[in-house]
Image 1 (cartoon, helix red, strand yellow):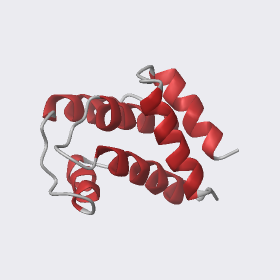
Image 2 (cartoon, helix red, strand yellow):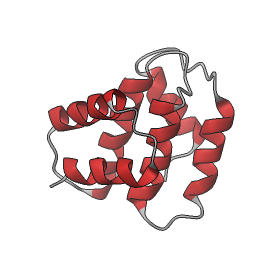
Image 3 (cartoon, one colour):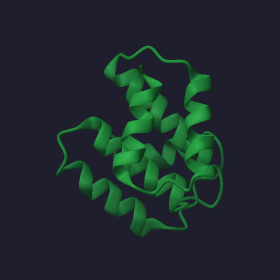
Image 4 (cartoon, helix red, strand yellow):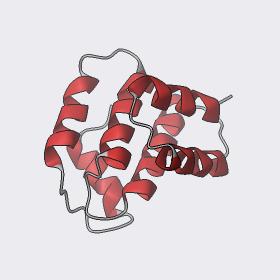
Length: 110
């Protein structure tokens, strides 16, 4: 759904859009074409941004904005504070498994 330019644009809302781990973001974007599940697509992007630190700064805020953007596009009602709690939980647990990230995203919309 989102491309590299869109993701950098989201980061520009919080910082300067400077990529420091381009390969991780490129890999996450390449997986979007191979996954029909939007939650799995989002989980790959979140992992690249939050765990692999694609950007010089603003990774946590960018990850939260990515979740909100996907949920908005899909028409889900959500509590933004739950997204923030989810991001913090992922960081504290160093969550890097796609399946676990998917589950945490699903918890935001329940």
